[in-house]
Length: 256
Image 1 (cartoon, rainbow, N blue to C red):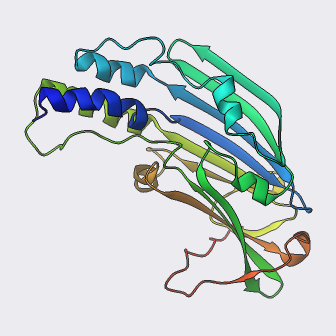
Image 2 (image 1 turned 30 degrees about the vertical axis):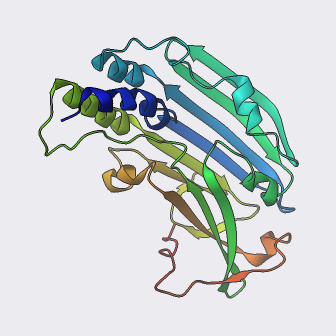
């Protein structure tokens, strides 16, 4: 059971773990032959779920507590050498805030230093052999989608606990993640879906209906995207890493 003191603690905790991230997250990464590139982001934050939880606990959230990210807050995480932001739109309507922006990066080191849009964003290059490179693009979704169900579904719960769990489960069910990656040459394989009319790109889409198992892991670790490309298309990569030992390696890219 949740005592009054625990509930007061939750009021502080919930803004951090419940819908401080994105319910609907889309990104498009384009990598150029010189190692520069572009990252386009389009995501929506919906704070109405947090309002439901606060009200269930007898709290009336203020407009400030229910607002989404501001332009100034977003730009703070993008104040990085080698990063420019040619486009940024922040559209707030009620409890929903939609952010659309384009980030140009001079190199992958600059991209890795961007904060607030996927922790530990990393692109690695492995020697696949036969003149092929395995590109591994990973994004930690923990800070993108920090939503965690509250309470024990099998345990005894009062009406407030039940309401909190119902709202947070509903919020997780609504989460969607989509990424499109384009490399500077045709892909041999990937563990994503091919893009019609663009042999250089693949798409990854995770939602509850399409893949419940992967969807359940969103917000709890990395999404890993694997692509195979000819070495000649990545002249900026000076040195390739050896493939990890078989027991430690992620599954190889599936056939396109």
